[in-house]
Length: 93
Image (cartoon, helix red, strand yellow):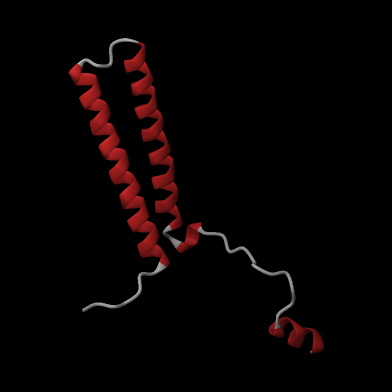
């Protein structure tokens, strides 16, 4: 049994795959709505706009997760501005 913890890259790639999968399902849903003819009328246009907006959002989120999976695309943000022990040692030198 493999009990190795998943690293950040694995989590982000898994999330990106999940989001892209959801986007693909939304595209299929859009094709089904378009081919069944229920896209005629005001309600059909509202449904089509909702599906298109959902596909756009999932594409943006999936691309962001995919890009963040690679360390060279991340920015390291300091959590605390308080000096740590290594900073105090440098000041004494």
